[in-house]
Length: 385
Image 1: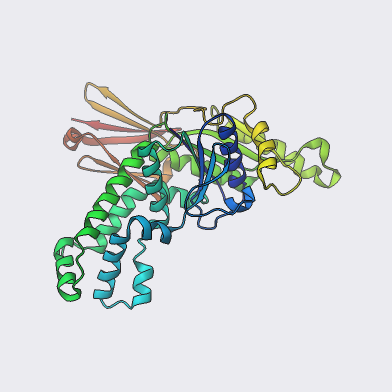
Image 2: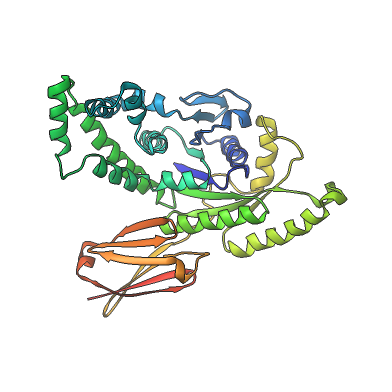
């Protein structure tokens, strides 16, 4: 199976590019599913077809789905939802508020991951294309397993009682058996960790960043690339969308065309050696399979939509006589933005408002952090015996 996720700043045309990619993969004979993880769904509009929380066949080999967190929890994780709902009500939270709180933070993103885990293990599709939310929400999705564990640790404080002890108390007061909810919650975290490993495999999962030839959008694309490298995900292409064709625009767009040329060159230089895919502005709203087909042909030309376009290595371990060098790739940042700490076998890298924990081999707990230095684009960390 191939999984391709499209991300980028809101409004750059991720949905159009993702839908075009899915359509081309289906035309190439691969059973393809395109799914939207954006709470503000626009996939139905782009396809000009009404979608549901379950996959809908919309063309030969092509299926589409828009996630709904409440539907997903009701169908697959109702025991866990009841667990959370009951505990909140036991704590004195009113019914309506308890119902809302029972949807855990990040559950919108988690439901996407859990559907993907299901499809991956069942081998239902050859290709899954993900039309993701804007960059910030995508990063939340991809870092979700760690965030979810952190939330649960805080929600059920070890200083008070173990979760099972709490639920026994809840059962005593409410008469509701909650062991199934706990088992479902444990299973949920296991599935999240499992599918995250799939996303970290560059032969299976690729991320493609969609941008426009505009200053603010390019900055967002660079930031996204930096964070995705920090988390270890493979970005295999950058898509420049809505390029105005010079021969079809008048004098009014003369300044824009000049800046567009400059920004396209900047994108090509900045993201080298990543493949740069280009889509011309269509001069109209794009919706419906016919219009998407025209874009897919120009977007990939002779390439297969689902092929791995590029494989990078964002993390390396190098042994020397005194210990180890750990290298992680962080493009588009300065040394002053990076802060690093070591706790046992864990390295914590802070980069602006983003944090990544790198779990090292267990023997690394006995190594000391000697130094770290930034040799653009590599952060080099020296651990000695």
